[in-house]
Amino acid sequence: METKMEVISLVKGINDVYGSPGYTPVVFIDYSISPHEKIAYYEMADCCIINALRDGMNLVPYEYVVCRQGTEEMDRHCLIHEVPKRTSTLILSEFIGCSPSLSGAIRVNPWSIQDVADGLSRASWMSSHERQLHHQKHYRYISSHDVTFWTRGFSKELERACKVNANQIYYRLGISLSFRVVSLSPNFRKLSISEVVSIYKRTTNRAIFLDYDGTIIPVSSASKVPSTALVSILNDLCANPGNTVFIISGRGRTTLDEWFCSCTNLGIVSEHGYFIRWTRDSSWESSPPFGINFKWKNTVELVMKSYTEATDGAYIESKESALVWNHQYADVEFGSCQAKELSNHLQSLLIDAPVLVHRGQNIVEVKPQGVAKGMAVEKILKQLSANGKLLDLIICIGDDRSDKNMFRSLNDAVARPSLAAPPEVFACTVGQKPSSAKYYIEDTDEVLELLSAIVETQNGSAPNE
Ligand SMILES: O=P(O)(O)OC[C@H]1O[C@H](O[C@H]2O[C@H](CO)[C@@H](O)[C@H](O)[C@H]2O)[C@H](O)[C@@H](O)[C@@H]1O
Image (cartoon, rainbow, N blue to C red; front, side, top):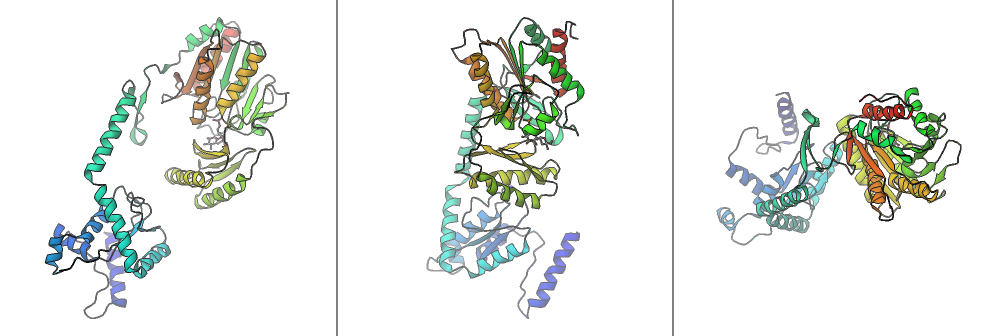
């Protein structure tokens, strides 16, 4: 009601200033009108503006263009005897669903009064020839993308999805806004701690790869520094000469170095595989080699800065090989909208640069192409084999997209026919969700439970079953 009163008052204000006897510039229709009347309005309108802040699939622009095309019968009723040159002009908010499909429309940002005013001005000054061209383009698109076109497209997509997912098992997860249906492979199952422990007991050469955030430290935890208990578990695991233990993280090496300075035998992979260090006292190896071209960082930083200015709570994290735009402290919905837009923006801008733009948990990250956790895992496995260490057990745990690549590399490495006796592999994702891992574990608490159970076995006391 308040909005309606405001609109009425604005309309009155404009009409008082710009109107004259017999001329009312703004006619506000706030009652329902018949379809015929609406068609007549559309048919008469030189320009149609829809500047909604957000909506799904608004059909008004399509209806407007079709009405402007008219029919012979409409022409007859309007006493038009010669086929006229059809024109139409559309001004559309860039945030509405149909906006990208109507490429001849003048696109405006509805949040900016100036942008909308410029759009109206452009529409008023557009030549008749240009209006005709836009109209033809839109009308052609609308006539060829009719209900049959969309129905066929949807059913084809549905058929494809059914074929791909025929053997999958479907689960309903979450509640309220986080509710989703996920399809999982029938072989995907919960990791049994007792099974892993019993296999651990009868193996001698093991590799344990652990992601950091979301795997051994909860995403929700305010402090990201590893607890004394966690450091102690890792040290106990590393104390067994048969174990090669690596933290495989996207975080920078200085942070990880500082956090794990008391873990002498712990291996660290930082910046998603860009840096590898086998023990605390060995030096960092870099792959690709140190000194590759990082010119793209300047451009990326400029773009990220402009999104940071427009997004309250967002900030930029500068790593040695990568730049990260973090929106953890921004408004949840706006932050992820901005992240999506930034990621698209960067992808189109960096099409020729040797980088990868990827989205993670509350972050958009730009890093060198080819740098991935899987690459690091491969490198470690190769090195172990070159050192004559034949692994009989591999445990690999991670929680997010960057870890998928690690699971895939592991699957590939183990499937290689060169391995006479393939090791037991437990590739495990944290949380029940689609993954390239064969197993899942509920949360970080359960990961720590698993690691503690292993340590207890190793120290001789039976773990709690
Ligand atoms: O590979 P991971 O160990 O899972 O690390 C990936 C990223 O970790 C950090 O981001 C995460 O922690 C941030 C707060 O400390 C949080 O805001 C963000 O949502 C998390 O994704 C790190 O800042 C990134 O550079 C790493 O890529």
